Image 1 (cartoon, rainbow, N blue to C red):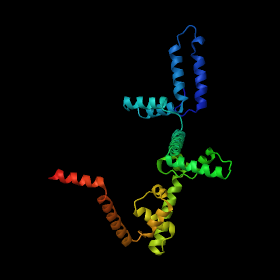
Image 2 (image 1 turned 135 degrees about the horizontal axis):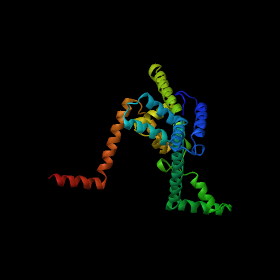
Image 3 (image 1 turned 180 degrees about the vertical axis):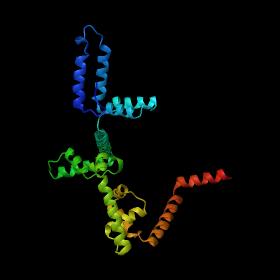
Image 4 (image 1 turned 135 degrees about the vertical axis):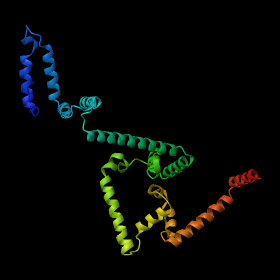
Length: 274
């Protein structure tokens, strides 16, 4: 195409037009210029494409590179996806989050349906309906069911989906989460290790939960009375933690000793070891 290595896209395009007109088969009736015309088109295809041109430039700089390496560079330039990786990752995270939301929503609705089929729930609805009837209320059974379901708490993997738990939202909030974690650690060291300040209610709850080995979701499932019972033991104090663990172990042994199946299992082990 008679262009320099550093030729601009405009210069390449101009040269291509000139050479293609010069060697076009229709312009040369008495001469076979098809091979030259084909080479010109191929050259323009390479030089007009940024990725292919970069590959060609690398080949000129390293003509002794292995044949495999040259093929790899060529096919990478031709067939590699041109889509921005950021867009691809955003799309994947978005689709996963949508799937996550609808799956959790489906599981939550199914859980509510199973709850409605329980004898306890139906009994509660019927009693409430009779009470409303006695009061000459206009509430229907459907209204009562809806009202009771609003008070039902479902925890764990079957709980209602929350946007903050979706993968995409977690990813977006990751910098904030990291900064908050660092801030909380520094605050804890300053307030309670250096200044020796007493623990607040949130700190006591956090220490109690961690001493018990509970995740936040498991702690949230407890009734308020259960949480207060744990807090009364003050197990954030090392001595109280040891005392609590001993009491819990004694209760566990007592329950196991009174358990019929456990007794049967112990008798089975004794017979087996004889």
